[in-house]
Each structure stands twice: as C-alpha cells, then as structure tokens.
Image (cartoon, rainbow, N blue to C red; front, side, top):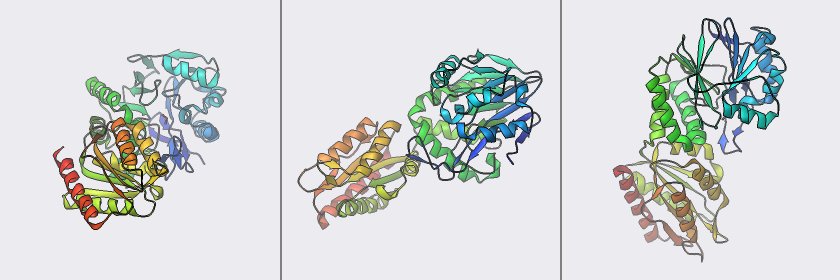
Length: 399
Ligand code: FEO
C-alpha cells in the first residue's frame, strides 16, 4: 500500500495519486482520469524532499516517505511552487521534519507566509544558487509565472535531471510514472491539454525560459514533473512541443463552436462546416452545451481558425457561448484568426458584434467580418454560409 518508486539510486517518487479529480481551476479544465501530485525524495549525505501534495493526500505522501526513511531525518523541504495542489500538505509535513529547512525563493517565502502564516526555518535561494547534498548538487532556476510568481525549477547536476514542477506536466492519473510506459500520442495529448488550459497565456515567459534552459547547455536525462507522467524518453519532444505552442505555431484546422436555440444557428454552423471542408481544411464542430470546454481549448491550441456562433436571447448571446468566450479571453491564444455567426429575431447583429469584440480582446484577428441572419436562414443564406466557410478556409491556409 502506498509504495514509493525508486527512480534511480537514492531518488524516489513519493507523491500521491488523485484518481477522483474531475476538474481543475474552477471547472473549465476537465481532468477525466484525475491527476497526480508528484513529490521526490533525494537521499544523499543530506536528504531533500522536493515538492508537496494537496492537503488531503498528506497520509499517502507520509506513508510513501516512511517506506524509504524516517521523515525526521529530512534536512531540506524544497518548495518549488506555492499553489495549494503542491503546498496544501506542507504544514502537516513540516511538523514531522523538526530539523528541516524550507528551501524556496523570496516570492515562495512571501506566498507561503500569506497562505499558512507560519515562520518556518526558511532558506531563500535564487537562480544559480546551489545546494550540496553530499555527492549530489541541486541548482535552482527561478521560473516566475510558470505558472505563479513563486515557481521554480531545480536541476540535479550529477544526474542531469530537471525537476520542472508544473511545466511539462499533465493532469493524468495512472499507475505509471513515465512517458515510455504509455502511448506517445496519449502523453502528448495530455501535455497539450495542460499547456492550453493553464500555460497558454504565459507563452512569452515560457519561450524565454526555454531559451534560458537551452543556453544552460546541460544534459536533460529526465524531466520530473509535479503532475502526471515524467519524461525520460521523449523529453526533447516535450520541449519541442512547448516551443511550438509558445511560439503560436498552428496547422490549417478550424474549430467551430456554437450554441443554438431553435436550430437556426445550427444550420449556419453546418453550412460553414461544409464550406470549410470544401475549401480543403479540416474542421471540427462542437455544440457547446454538450461539449467539454477544456477539450475544445486543447483542440484549438494548434488550430489556426475559430468560428463561434450563438443565437440571440434578451439581446445577448447564449450562456454556454459566453462561458466559452470568457475562457478564451483569459487564455489569450496566439496567431489565430476567427469569425462569428448567429441568428436573431429583432436585435440585428448585436450578438455577432459582441462575440467579435471578445475575439479581438482575446488577441484573435477577426477575418472576414461576421455573418448573422434573421430568424431562420433561407436556402440562399445557407449558400452564403457555405461560401463564407470556403473563404475562411482560404484565409486559414494563407495565414
Ligand atoms: Fe500544479 Fe500551479 O499548480
């Protein structure tokens, strides 16, 4: 029960598996299988515990550690990130570590104090500082806004292992710990979902940090994440994918997301879909109230185009569309083009203009201008939609 995993001599995974989690960050990021909170125990002349778990997983974390050593012997607890999925159980754990220093950066200390109001024996580190444990040395790399101001990576110099915390992780619960134990497509899909739903708005910072890591010119034999599977075979692919996403690279693909009241907007969506496909571009259609927003956001990560549609109700858009656009605005997708469509009874164009404005505020270039029709679209109006879809496909292919 609650066995640790020895990753290599003296280095153990001692985290926790949250099989039940079904959403993260306020319901929009669906976590269909759950997640893990990865923690690592490094046993050398000195002993370091790296990263923590969510509060309710303290017993599981403690039991895995106890199967390796008596927690009283731990010299350092290294906090790479204060978000509660990693720090919630720190107060309980620190009570078991009477001699441990709590190692973090200044922002980490500030944020821990603001969460737990406890003056632990802090040791403040910054980028480039080293912690010698005996035969092994950890080097610290601050990584602010990946994805909180306090975020930090640690690099185990002798083994070429990067402890990356949230970066390169996935919300994926399984009995496996490494990328080469599951299908490559599965881990990349989960990697994309994590990036799109959590890290996307931080792309400029991530790009700079990736360049900094490349400039370090050190081996990366493993990347040990704080969520889901870690990387010991495809770490280059994981970094390459992050570079592509952070640079806003897209493929010719269109996401069509809509909601409909009496099927008018649905008819427009179907005609647009046919038009885009006829224009030689792959397209996916999602009716928002029955679709998973987290999954749509993942699909949009590398898609060039977005078409969003809504009926008009009370001079406004339907709630499922508003929720989707609200999420999109926060994620600030890079290098995308989009347009809007919908139907109305008497409030002409109000909804498509509102949706267009949100797309613009999200950083999406609106081309060509949007489409909306009164009540039920006629055959000739549906032909216009088809042609609009074909033109949009051309825009996607040329941009
Ligand atoms: Fe996994 Fe930003 O916490």
